[in-house]
Length: 362
Ligand code: SAM
Ligand code: SF4
Image 1 (tube, helix red, strand yellow):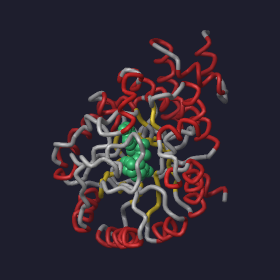
Image 2 (cartoon, helix red, strand yellow):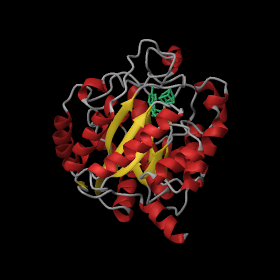
Image 3 (cartoon, rainbow, N blue to C red):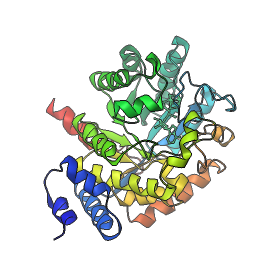
Image 4 (cartoon, protein in one colour):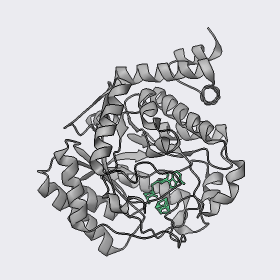
């Protein structure tokens, strides 16, 4: 038995084990993937759940150095879907038996926006028979706002920590209160207190990021007892400050492989959580999301934003499916997932098993 096989037999992984797993190649990497697939099948089954993704608006008050829709990017064409457009997209998800929605926006914190989201949540539930599980991803808000949204029917919230290294976080964001690492961690704690299924994640292959950073990210996610994770490769955007470091980045293929290894190791570490196969995987490799599913992911977020706006929600270069009609995406995804051997949990919300168990423990 070689070192990697020995690690994969262990009940729990040390930091050093994770570092070695992140460095695997060829045969050893495939052993990691097989182990993750085995754990997935045993603990969460071979079902993939859909969350219809609505990119409601790309208006954002923040200036994260990596993001194409940062406030300081004056080349971004700003849009804001109407309430009717959001509700129509939600109905499409419901009629297509996706059973869950994820609504994502840039970060806006004013009262008009927070009230609008509350009203939209009520309206979506009213018009879809209360059958959709709704995830929000709208950045850092007060605990009061999170509670209001929860009381109006959102059940999951996704707030990526981006990197758990404070040093690296500081290199990725402006140095001010709106971009404070500790505040982001506090938000995750607020979300948990309020009662959400809490999701987080990191970007993989960032400039200055080390393998040790990534191992620490995984251990941090485990220690925070997170319910769901969405993490994917960092992809540079030419209209962002971080673009100047593009020469020091790992080649795309390596970032992609690292992201798959991160998903696989996380599945082994946190057996019953929900893990999304992020769109950024597909931006690098046409079969990226399917590959994510094969190594442990169990959630996919088909983009159901009206086609007209999709090109404007450009976080990075090469975003997939920006030109497809919503229906094309639905059909191609279904066929692609079947090819992985998994099946789609149509009509099932697919809540995090980890969350359900955590709640029943009290
Ligand atoms: N504004 C909210 C927030 O930041 O939490 C939600 C929307 S934000 C666009 C969603 C995620 O996009 C971020 O958490 C970040 O990880 C990811 N993202 C932004 N720019 C990216 C890039 N260049 N490459 C890969 N992911 C990126
Ligand atoms: Fe705004 Fe989110 Fe992009 Fe940061 S990552 S600039 S908060 S949309």
